[in-house]
Length: 265
Image 1 (cartoon, rainbow, N blue to C red):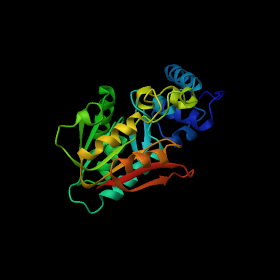
Image 2: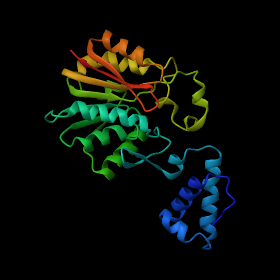
Image 3: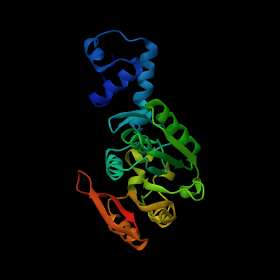
Protein backbone atom coordinates (compact mmCIF):
# COMPACT_ATOMS: atom_id res chain seq x y z
CA UNK A 1 0.00 0.00 0.00
CA UNK A 2 1.05 3.55 -0.64
CA UNK A 3 2.99 4.64 2.46
CA UNK A 4 4.28 8.10 1.53
CA UNK A 5 0.97 9.88 2.04
CA UNK A 6 0.86 13.28 3.74
CA UNK A 7 -2.34 12.30 5.48
CA UNK A 8 -2.46 11.50 9.19
CA UNK A 9 -2.17 7.75 9.73
CA UNK A 10 -5.79 7.33 10.83
CA UNK A 11 -7.16 9.11 7.76
CA UNK A 12 -4.74 7.15 5.56
CA UNK A 13 -6.16 3.91 6.95
CA UNK A 14 -9.76 5.09 6.72
CA UNK A 15 -9.38 5.90 3.03
CA UNK A 16 -7.80 2.54 2.28
CA UNK A 17 -10.58 0.79 4.21
CA UNK A 18 -13.08 2.69 2.08
CA UNK A 19 -11.34 1.94 -1.23
CA UNK A 20 -10.82 -1.75 -0.48
CA UNK A 21 -14.00 -2.19 1.57
CA UNK A 22 -12.16 -4.02 4.32
CA UNK A 23 -11.90 -3.63 8.12
CA UNK A 24 -8.87 -2.03 9.78
CA UNK A 25 -7.65 -5.42 11.02
CA UNK A 26 -7.40 -6.62 7.41
CA UNK A 27 -5.23 -3.63 6.50
CA UNK A 28 -2.83 -4.35 9.33
CA UNK A 29 -2.59 -8.02 8.40
CA UNK A 30 -2.05 -7.28 4.68
CA UNK A 31 0.00 -4.11 4.79
CA UNK A 32 2.62 -5.50 2.41
CA UNK A 33 0.16 -6.86 -0.16
CA UNK A 34 0.26 -5.53 -3.70
CA UNK A 35 -2.56 -3.16 -4.61
CA UNK A 36 -4.38 -3.14 -7.94
CA UNK A 37 -3.65 -0.03 -10.00
CA UNK A 38 -7.35 0.87 -10.12
CA UNK A 39 -7.50 0.82 -6.31
CA UNK A 40 -4.30 2.86 -6.04
CA UNK A 41 -5.70 5.43 -8.47
CA UNK A 42 -8.93 5.64 -6.49
CA UNK A 43 -6.96 6.16 -3.27
CA UNK A 44 -4.89 8.94 -4.85
CA UNK A 45 -8.09 10.67 -5.98
CA UNK A 46 -9.59 10.56 -2.48
CA UNK A 47 -6.29 11.54 -0.90
CA UNK A 48 -6.14 14.66 -3.09
CA UNK A 49 -9.64 15.65 -2.03
CA UNK A 50 -8.74 15.28 1.64
CA UNK A 51 -5.47 17.19 1.25
CA UNK A 52 -7.52 19.99 -0.33
CA UNK A 53 -9.50 20.17 2.90
CA UNK A 54 -12.69 18.31 1.98
CA UNK A 55 -14.24 16.75 5.09
CA UNK A 56 -13.71 13.02 5.56
CA UNK A 57 -17.46 12.66 6.10
CA UNK A 58 -18.19 13.84 2.56
CA UNK A 59 -15.43 11.73 1.06
CA UNK A 60 -16.64 8.59 2.84
CA UNK A 61 -20.31 9.56 2.53
CA UNK A 62 -21.14 8.89 6.16
CA UNK A 63 -20.70 10.06 9.76
CA UNK A 64 -21.41 8.48 13.14
CA UNK A 65 -24.05 10.17 15.30
CA UNK A 66 -25.58 8.85 18.52
CA UNK A 67 -23.81 5.55 17.90
CA UNK A 68 -25.39 5.10 14.47
CA UNK A 69 -24.00 5.41 10.95
CA UNK A 70 -25.65 8.22 8.95
CA UNK A 71 -25.29 8.90 5.25
CA UNK A 72 -24.16 12.44 4.43
CA UNK A 73 -23.56 14.43 1.27
CA UNK A 74 -22.62 18.04 0.46
CA UNK A 75 -26.37 18.75 0.50
CA UNK A 76 -26.45 18.45 4.31
CA UNK A 77 -24.49 19.54 7.34
CA UNK A 78 -22.17 16.97 8.86
CA UNK A 79 -23.70 15.78 12.16
CA UNK A 80 -21.62 16.93 15.13
CA UNK A 81 -21.23 15.61 18.68
CA UNK A 82 -22.68 18.75 20.27
CA UNK A 83 -25.95 18.18 18.42
CA UNK A 84 -26.31 14.92 20.34
CA UNK A 85 -27.14 17.17 23.31
CA UNK A 86 -30.22 18.36 21.43
CA UNK A 87 -31.38 14.77 20.91
CA UNK A 88 -30.71 13.91 24.56
CA UNK A 89 -32.70 16.93 25.71
CA UNK A 90 -35.56 15.95 23.41
CA UNK A 91 -35.60 12.36 24.63
CA UNK A 92 -35.60 13.55 28.22
CA UNK A 93 -38.62 15.75 27.59
CA UNK A 94 -40.54 12.91 25.92
CA UNK A 95 -40.07 10.39 28.73
CA UNK A 96 -43.42 9.24 30.13
CA UNK A 97 -45.50 10.83 27.36
CA UNK A 98 -47.91 8.68 25.40
CA UNK A 99 -47.42 8.87 21.62
CA UNK A 100 -45.95 12.39 21.66
CA UNK A 101 -45.82 14.45 18.47
CA UNK A 102 -42.38 15.83 17.59
CA UNK A 103 -41.32 18.30 14.90
CA UNK A 104 -37.73 18.72 13.71
CA UNK A 105 -37.32 21.93 11.70
CA UNK A 106 -34.55 22.00 9.08
CA UNK A 107 -33.72 18.32 9.42
CA UNK A 108 -30.77 18.15 6.96
CA UNK A 109 -29.40 14.59 7.13
CA UNK A 110 -32.26 13.61 9.41
CA UNK A 111 -29.83 12.79 12.21
CA UNK A 112 -31.93 14.53 14.88
CA UNK A 113 -35.35 13.29 13.75
CA UNK A 114 -34.20 9.75 13.06
CA UNK A 115 -32.36 9.52 16.38
CA UNK A 116 -35.40 10.75 18.32
CA UNK A 117 -37.64 8.27 16.47
CA UNK A 118 -35.30 5.40 17.30
CA UNK A 119 -34.78 6.43 20.92
CA UNK A 120 -38.53 7.02 21.45
CA UNK A 121 -40.38 4.48 19.26
CA UNK A 122 -43.77 5.70 20.54
CA UNK A 123 -43.13 9.22 19.27
CA UNK A 124 -44.75 10.48 16.08
CA UNK A 125 -41.86 12.34 14.48
CA UNK A 126 -42.14 14.79 11.59
CA UNK A 127 -39.19 16.58 9.97
CA UNK A 128 -39.02 19.47 7.52
CA UNK A 129 -36.46 20.93 5.17
CA UNK A 130 -36.55 23.40 2.31
CA UNK A 131 -33.96 21.41 0.34
CA UNK A 132 -35.21 18.47 -1.71
CA UNK A 133 -31.67 17.08 -1.82
CA UNK A 134 -31.41 17.22 1.96
CA UNK A 135 -34.76 15.46 2.36
CA UNK A 136 -33.56 12.72 0.02
CA UNK A 137 -30.57 12.08 2.29
CA UNK A 138 -32.78 12.16 5.39
CA UNK A 139 -35.25 9.71 3.89
CA UNK A 140 -32.44 7.33 2.99
CA UNK A 141 -31.20 7.46 6.58
CA UNK A 142 -34.66 6.78 7.98
CA UNK A 143 -35.06 3.76 5.70
CA UNK A 144 -31.59 2.37 6.41
CA UNK A 145 -31.96 2.70 10.17
CA UNK A 146 -35.59 1.64 10.39
CA UNK A 147 -36.98 4.90 11.78
CA UNK A 148 -40.57 6.04 11.31
CA UNK A 149 -40.35 9.71 10.33
CA UNK A 150 -42.70 11.83 8.25
CA UNK A 151 -40.74 14.17 5.96
CA UNK A 152 -42.21 17.46 4.75
CA UNK A 153 -40.72 19.98 2.35
CA UNK A 154 -40.93 23.67 3.07
CA UNK A 155 -39.52 26.60 5.02
CA UNK A 156 -39.86 26.11 8.77
CA UNK A 157 -43.54 25.96 9.80
CA UNK A 158 -44.76 26.56 6.24
CA UNK A 159 -44.09 22.88 5.56
CA UNK A 160 -46.65 21.82 8.19
CA UNK A 161 -50.41 21.79 7.59
CA UNK A 162 -52.39 24.46 9.42
CA UNK A 163 -53.75 23.35 12.76
CA UNK A 164 -51.18 20.65 13.49
CA UNK A 165 -49.60 20.92 16.91
CA UNK A 166 -46.74 19.15 18.67
CA UNK A 167 -45.55 18.20 22.13
CA UNK A 168 -41.99 19.08 21.19
CA UNK A 169 -40.29 21.15 18.52
CA UNK A 170 -36.53 20.89 18.00
CA UNK A 171 -34.17 22.57 15.56
CA UNK A 172 -30.53 23.10 14.72
CA UNK A 173 -31.06 26.06 12.36
CA UNK A 174 -28.50 28.24 10.55
CA UNK A 175 -27.13 30.51 13.28
CA UNK A 176 -23.71 31.72 12.10
CA UNK A 177 -23.50 35.41 11.24
CA UNK A 178 -22.66 36.15 7.61
CA UNK A 179 -19.37 37.84 8.46
CA UNK A 180 -18.06 35.11 10.74
CA UNK A 181 -14.56 34.08 9.56
CA UNK A 182 -15.27 30.44 10.48
CA UNK A 183 -17.40 30.19 7.35
CA UNK A 184 -14.21 30.47 5.30
CA UNK A 185 -12.23 27.83 7.18
CA UNK A 186 -12.22 24.12 7.96
CA UNK A 187 -15.14 21.88 7.11
CA UNK A 188 -17.56 24.82 6.92
CA UNK A 189 -16.09 25.82 3.54
CA UNK A 190 -17.61 22.67 2.05
CA UNK A 191 -20.95 22.56 3.86
CA UNK A 192 -24.18 24.07 2.43
CA UNK A 193 -24.13 27.80 3.21
CA UNK A 194 -27.92 27.99 3.63
CA UNK A 195 -27.71 25.49 6.49
CA UNK A 196 -24.98 27.49 8.25
CA UNK A 197 -25.94 31.16 7.97
CA UNK A 198 -29.04 33.27 7.40
CA UNK A 199 -26.91 35.76 5.48
CA UNK A 200 -27.38 38.29 8.27
CA UNK A 201 -26.81 38.38 12.03
CA UNK A 202 -27.31 34.63 12.52
CA UNK A 203 -30.51 35.12 14.53
CA UNK A 204 -33.16 35.29 11.80
CA UNK A 205 -34.00 31.57 11.81
CA UNK A 206 -33.91 31.38 15.60
CA UNK A 207 -36.32 34.35 15.82
CA UNK A 208 -38.70 32.85 13.24
CA UNK A 209 -38.77 29.48 14.99
CA UNK A 210 -39.34 30.97 18.44
CA UNK A 211 -41.98 33.43 17.26
CA UNK A 212 -43.92 30.77 15.35
CA UNK A 213 -43.73 28.07 18.00
CA UNK A 214 -46.68 29.19 20.13
CA UNK A 215 -49.34 28.29 17.58
CA UNK A 216 -47.64 24.96 16.86
CA UNK A 217 -47.15 23.70 20.42
CA UNK A 218 -49.67 21.87 22.54
CA UNK A 219 -50.22 23.11 26.11
CA UNK A 220 -46.97 22.72 28.07
CA UNK A 221 -45.16 21.79 24.89
CA UNK A 222 -41.43 22.42 24.63
CA UNK A 223 -39.10 24.09 22.17
CA UNK A 224 -35.40 23.14 22.22
CA UNK A 225 -32.83 24.85 20.00
CA UNK A 226 -29.16 24.51 19.18
CA UNK A 227 -27.42 27.87 18.73
CA UNK A 228 -24.04 29.56 18.50
CA UNK A 229 -21.48 29.78 21.28
CA UNK A 230 -22.39 33.41 22.10
CA UNK A 231 -26.16 33.33 21.50
CA UNK A 232 -27.56 31.62 24.61
CA UNK A 233 -28.53 34.81 26.43
CA UNK A 234 -30.23 36.21 23.33
CA UNK A 235 -32.14 32.98 22.73
CA UNK A 236 -33.28 32.90 26.35
CA UNK A 237 -34.64 36.43 25.97
CA UNK A 238 -36.42 35.49 22.74
CA UNK A 239 -38.10 32.53 24.43
CA UNK A 240 -39.14 34.51 27.49
CA UNK A 241 -40.56 37.31 25.32
CA UNK A 242 -42.56 34.74 23.35
CA UNK A 243 -44.23 33.37 26.48
CA UNK A 244 -41.98 30.46 27.40
CA UNK A 245 -41.22 29.53 31.01
CA UNK A 246 -38.59 27.32 32.63
CA UNK A 247 -36.17 28.69 30.04
CA UNK A 248 -32.69 27.26 30.48
CA UNK A 249 -29.45 26.54 28.59
CA UNK A 250 -27.18 23.51 28.66
CA UNK A 251 -23.39 23.51 28.42
CA UNK A 252 -21.45 21.27 26.06
CA UNK A 253 -18.27 19.45 27.09
CA UNK A 254 -16.25 22.60 26.40
CA UNK A 255 -18.40 24.57 28.85
CA UNK A 256 -20.22 26.49 26.10
CA UNK A 257 -23.96 27.10 26.38
CA UNK A 258 -25.03 25.29 23.23
CA UNK A 259 -28.66 24.20 23.76
CA UNK A 260 -31.52 26.36 25.03
CA UNK A 261 -35.17 25.51 25.54
CA UNK A 262 -38.35 26.27 27.41
CA UNK A 263 -41.97 25.27 28.03
CA UNK A 264 -44.78 27.16 26.35
CA UNK A 265 -47.46 28.38 28.77
